[in-house]
Amino acid sequence: MISCCNLTRKFGAFTAVDSLSLEIPTGTICAMLGPNGAGKSTTVGMLTGLLVPTSGEAIVCGTNVAVNPVAVKRKIGVLPESLGLFDDLTVEEHLELTGDIYGLDAATTRERITRLLTVLGLTAGRRTFARSCSHGMRKKTAFAMALLPNPEALFLDEPFEAVDPVTSGVMADILRNAASRGVTVLLTSHILPMAARIADQFVIIRSGRSVLNSTAADLPRPLEELYFELAEAPVSGELEWLGQTR
Image 1 (cartoon, one colour):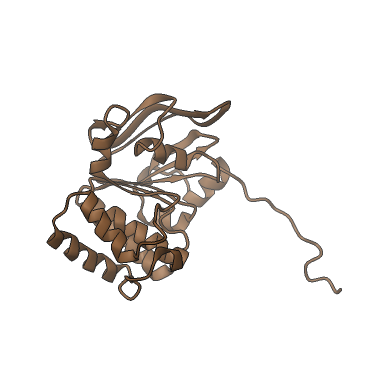
Image 2: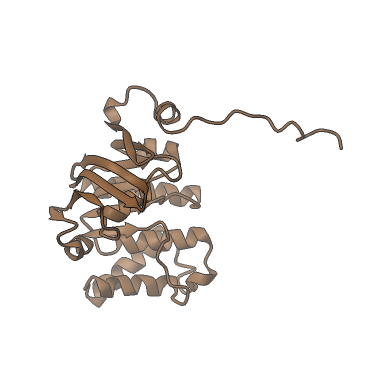
C-alpha cells in the first residue's frame, strides 16, 4: 500500500505540493495526472525518500518514509524523472549494478537481466553505453532497473514517454500482471489513453493540490474530458500566417 496524509513540500515561498492525501491499495495501479509543474514529480520524490516533505506523512509498504527511508528504498523500484543513468555504463552494466545493490545472487541477477533485455527489446543494445543510447533506450533501461529487484511497489515517472508503441504495450502488460500479483504501482503520465487503459485509480493534481481522486469504475465521465475540465483546458488558437502565400 502507498498512502500519504497532508503531504506538503515548499521550496522557499513556493508550495509545490499542498496538503496532498491519498491511499493506493495493494495491487492497484494509480495514474497521477496533471500539467507540467503540478507537483507530480515532487510527490514521487517524497514518497520514495528522495525529498523530505515540509510537513505531512507518507507510508509506503508499511514503513514511514521519513522515519526509515532506507528501508523503503529496499522495498521499491523507481523510474525517476532524470532516469538516473551513468553515461559510462552499458545497458547491461546498469542492470548488473542494480542486482548488486539489492543483494541478489549472481545467478538470479543474470536470469532476470536476460529476460528483461528480451522482453524490452534491449538485447541488441545491451553493450551500448548510456551516453550513446537513444532516449527510448535509456527509458527502457531505467524501467528494467526498477523491475529487476522484484519490488513491492513501483514508482514510475512518465514511463511511456519517448517509448515506441510495441514497447509501451509490453510495459503496460508487465505492470498489469505485476499488479495482479500484489505489486502496487504509482505512475505519472501525460499520455491519457495509456493511463486510461491500465490504471485502476486516477489522481489529478493542479498547482500541488488534488482535484480528483477516483477509481476507474467511479469516474463520472471519460478521463480526457475530466482532465481538460479539472487540470488544464486546451488553448484554442490559430496561427494565421501558416499556409499563407509568401
